[in-house]
Length: 545
Image (cartoon, rainbow, N blue to C red; front, side, top):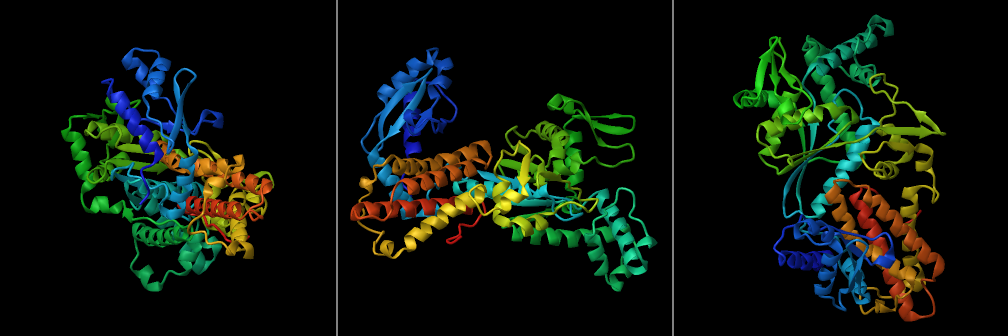
C-alpha cells in the first residue's frame, strides 16, 4: 500500500488553513517549479484566494507559509515568491522514502484515489467501418488508450468504447463500391466503375475476392452488401488495434440505437422540451438559445433525422451510467461539437458531462517531404503500414509527443533511427543501459532488497533523479487535470536525461561498497519508473538494445 503522498499532505494542510478563513477555493493545484532553486512543489492558492479575502496575495501567502507545519520528515521549509506563490522544499529524509515507496511496488507507485471512483466514459477512434484505420485514428488510439490507463491508475472508474458508425448513407455507398469491385473481380477492371463518392481502396478487392456465390444470392441490396463489407472492415480494424496494444471494453454499434428505438426517443425528448419549431417543412432545434451560433435542422422536410439526433441518443444513453463522457474526435468534427453540446444542455445535462477533445491532423514526413494521405482514394498510409515500418513502440510514443490540440509532424525516418535523436529510443536505451548494469557480475553480488542506506546519495545528479521520481504522481495528476497525455513523454525524456547525466558523471559500481549499493538501488528505481510510465503508454521497456 502506497503511503499518503506528499501532495495530499500539502493539499490537506492548505485546505484546512484556507477553510479557517471561511472561504472556498477551487481544487488546490500543485505544480513543479521550472527552477529547482524554487523548491520541489509550488502552489498559487494565495493568488486565487486574494479576491475573496480582499487582501494582497503575497500577504495571504506569507500567512499560509507561517502557519504551515514543516517537518524534517517531509516539508523542510516553505517560502513565498513573486506576487504570492508558495514554494515547498522537501527534506532529504523524504527523498529516501520516495525511492523506498517506488521500489516496494513499482507498478502501483503513483496510484491514487484522486478520481474517487467517478464513472467516466471514454470514446475514441470510432472510425467509420469503410476502410482501414488512418493516421489520425492511430493518434486517437494512442492518446485514448493512454488516458484510460492513467485515469484508472488515479482512481477513476473508466469504461472505454468504440462507436461503430454502421448507420446512414455511407453503408449503402460502401455496398455500391463493393458491388463494383465484385464485378471487376469477375469480369475485369473495366467492367464496372466505383460510384461517385464511393470507396476506391484496394481493401475492397480483397473482400470481393472472398465473396462467396451463396452470399451474392442473398445480397440484392446495396445496404446488405455494405453491411457485409462493414463487418469485414470492422473486424480488420479491431485486429489492427489489438496489434497496436489498444483494446476496448465495448464496441457499440450505431445500428443498435435504431433497433432499440433510442433515436426516435431522443428526437421526441427535444420535441417535448419545447425547444424546436417548424420552418419550410423541416424541424429546427433552437440551438442558438443553448450556446450554438445558429438554430439547427434536426429533421429534414422529407422526414430524415440529421446526424445530431443519433449522436444525441448515444450520449443520452451514456448519461445513464457515467458522470462524464470524454470523446476524442477528428479535426473535421469542430462544427458538430456545438450542436451536440447545445442539445444536451437543452435536455438538462450539465456542461461538464460532455468533454470533446479534437485530435489534430498528423503530417507524415519521409526524407523531409510530406506523405499525403487519402483513405477513400486508397493511396494513404494506414496504421498497419506505419507500424510495419516504424514499429508499434515508436508509433505510439510519437503520437503522444505533442498536445492533442496541435498538429503533429511524424518523421518516419527519425522514428526508425537507432540513436539518441529518436525520442523513444533515448528513453528505452536508458532502461536497457540500467539492465546491463544490473546484470554485471559485480552488481549481482549485492542484495538490493534489504538493508541499503540510500542517505549516502548526495550528489546533485542523484538528487535530481530522486526529485523526478517524486514528481511522477504530480505528472499523472496533470494528465488527469488537462485530459492530455503528452506530459508523460516530457517526464520520460527528463528522467532518461537525468539518468544519462548521472551515468556520465559518476561510476555506479566502485570501491565504496555502501555507495555502490545505494547507486545500484537508485538505478533499479529509475528502471522501474521508466518501465511503469512506458507501460501506461503501451510502449515496451526492452532489457537489451
